[in-house]
Amino acid sequence: MFNDLWVEKYRPPTLKDIVLKKEVREYFEQVKKTQHLPNHVMFCSPPGGGKTSLAKIIVKDILDASYLYINASDERGIDVIRSKVTNFAQTKSFDGKVKVVILDEMDGLTFDAQRALRNTMEEYADNVRFILTANYRNRIIAAIASRAAIFEIVPPLEDSIIYCLEVLKKENIKINGQKDKVLKIINECYPDIRKAINTLSKYVKDGAIEIKEEESNLGFSDKVLKILSEKDIDEVQLRKYVIENEVEFSNDYQLLLKNLFETVFNSTISFDKKREMMLVLGEGLYRHQLVMDFEINAFCTMIKLKKLLS
Image (tube, rainbow, N blue to C red; front, top):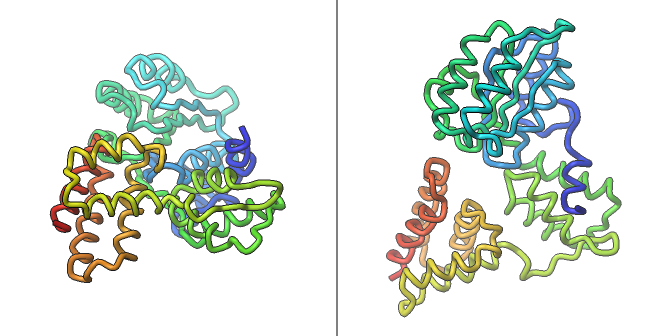
């Protein structure tokens, strides 16, 4: 409950409170002035970057709209579109306010549900606006993506750091010379501000931050790189080790690849080999946004790394 408390307590309630790129903020400041929101808006980014918060700010702070919120990763079938969404969309509001449907994590919807949604979005365009959020844009069918104004909601790193430090300040948490370790955690979690705040709260004890060196997520990537260098450990053993220790990186394979990149960058491996390895990891991080199975993508990336180290 303590981990969740900070995230909810400091969830930004208004547009001025949320961490956004300058151009995105300016766009929605204009929406607030004109009270005109495009029929279909889609927010895309990795988890924890503020997509859901921005969607709720739009309906509550910017438009003061009548809205329906659905977490599409929980209610992902065609029935929720035919019943809840269509029933809400087919009538106008009694008070004359704009009606908005927020479909959160809609990349979790089945393809049949997405096709049904497309029809509803077109048929009731005069009555309702749609705000869609997705962690993985490639999982949205083209017929919906092409109809939406798409925004990449990735908070600037510097502003994310300021936001997290402000949370610690408001909670009267003392850093006591551990600022470098705090910044390291924020950088490791970026762009997931939610995860950064939850991780920092985990290290609070008696009103102060206490982060031991070995508690950094980079510690596990150090172990993985060492295993990759071992000639007597094959790929099957490597995969088994990573899967059995998923708790070490919170089952976040994007974070694992990112930490491996930092570990390789800071390693004593020869520059030519290091450069090739970083290119492989960069490619793996890019593919992470496109694939259906994150573990398989990470494992294939590590096979390439092991080949370079052999």
